Figure 1: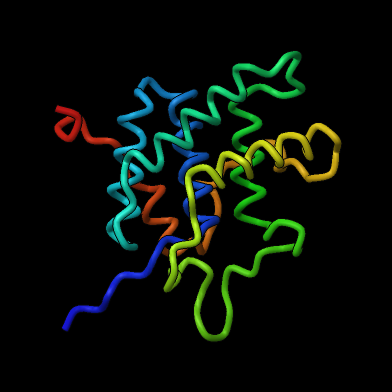
Figure 2 (figure 1 turned 120 degrees about the horizontal axis):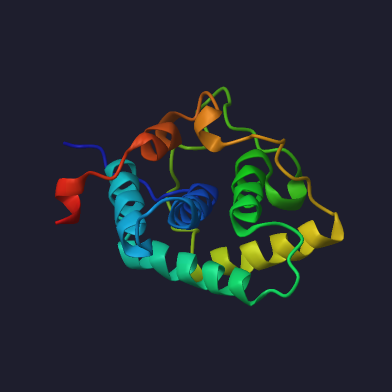
Length: 167
């Protein structure tokens, strides 16, 4: 009997939404193309994550950033800071423990904890905390693709968009 897939952890979903926005801002792909890529990659490891779940959050975050007056950071920097924060920190609890004795943080969850609207709210809260200086920025030149030991997340982010999938 095949093993039943678990739900995507909330922080992994948030990171993939962040990467969707980052790739949209820095590459020549539409938001829908990038969301489709990450949805397919997430669904290989976890219970199905739809393109619509990712694209809704990504659109709302992009809209929120475009409406900000006098931003302190460029949009691609801000989303990279968010990705770093969600990977390295578990909110106000402190540093995130990615590996443990009995498993890893990327394994999956029995219950669905991620939500598209919750991700947008988390990004907005992060943005305000960043502006106030209450959260750390990522180190200069940091990108998630340079991180080691990302297990399932590493496989998800290493997928590239194939031209034949776009047709």
